[in-house]
Length: 396
Image 1 (cartoon, one colour):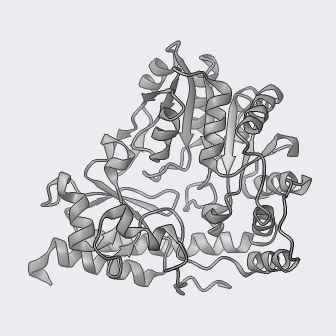
Image 2 (tube, one colour):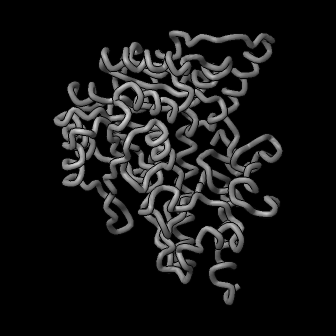
Image 3 (cartoon, rainbow, N blue to C red):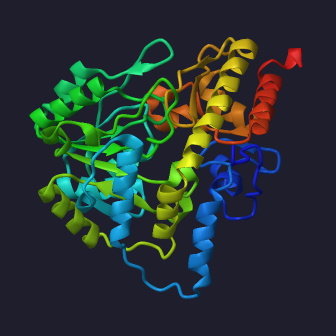
């Protein structure tokens, strides 16, 4: 490997949300002895090619207003073609300062206050707030829990999508937090249901590059023309290349009328301006760092296997759901000798590992935790040792 993923960069005292916000976020007295394994960014160094391009840009010495260039769209188009076998005309691509702001703009552009928006809990918790903050109604199509996995309740989805007040659906694929990578058949079914009921489909594909063999990410932009034309698809290099701080994402909208409505809403919300280094980072990532994405998935696959072995051998009372994509483990504590309503306190005070609590993702997640494995293996070893000490005190 060209990348040393075993190296842990120092992130403390850099205004880093993951490491420097623990006391405020979790209420712990001190963050000195708490391992942060929560928010979805990585404890890996950014590829040197990105640092090189950013250094060139910064050395220019002037950081005034910046426009989105044509190369932004062509770079995104090329990445989608080479990485995901998806045709994306550069004219479809619009800038957004993040996937969630892009979703917010889409909600405002394609629905009215009081309209219903379908989401599939347990799901990425900003989906709840971005709907309600825009005065739309949450309409739940909960995923059905199976044996260490989840499936879509299509019967319920058909009922919910047929409601006259429902105008939008937000799909997360790969799914955060449950780790599903939806098949072409599943995506086609979703697309057909939405099209039949004139429900616009917003697809968050931010984790698309992080998928484990034998699973393959199927971009919604590879669906038949009529179905994909009913969609708004969002990606970002932030997860794959650890670039969340640049607030740079891409929104891809095949239909010209939907695209015009989205663009107008972006202008109204003043979210069309890119930071002076955001495009530099995106283009360096997508044009020069495909090797890093490959190596990252390989390293994460090793971390995934390690975690599977640890839970199987040391924590039989826990259930690890199959991780098909993302670097986020979904772990079920409901059979452990812990009151699920005390799980939050147990993790932060007894285990001293900061995780995303399952109930943040909806009531369906109560009794679960989401654990970020995008870190050197040594941090995972420490986390599981701490968990064993707290969960099995008599055996340590």
